[in-house]
Length: 111
Image 1 (cartoon, rainbow, N blue to C red):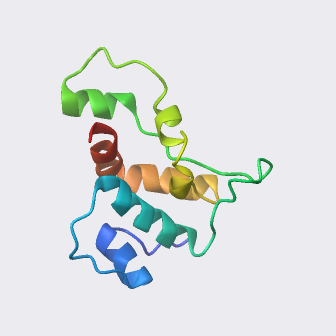
Image 2 (cartoon, helix red, strand yellow):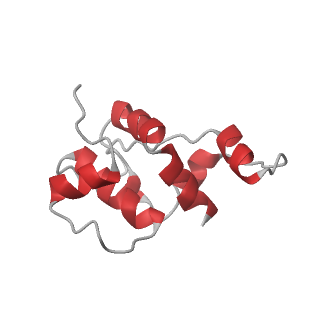
């Protein structure tokens, strides 16, 4: 699988989105997700449709915040209500996004 989206700017270019606007981390991740999914959109009314979410390492958040008492499942944060726009069509894309855009996911979680 060849992935040409390596940055938020790449995603904006692919989707012809103005990258100069001020956006939250969540909004940036929606753009990145849309570009990576290449037209695929999760159907919230279809519970049988496979949807994949990135996994963010707790250690990365603990390192950034200094909070060593962080508990809970971060995959639940990323797969919670309202986040279907951040789901992927394949586990490979979800894994790629969680690695390539880790700092953007951390920004979103910590906003």
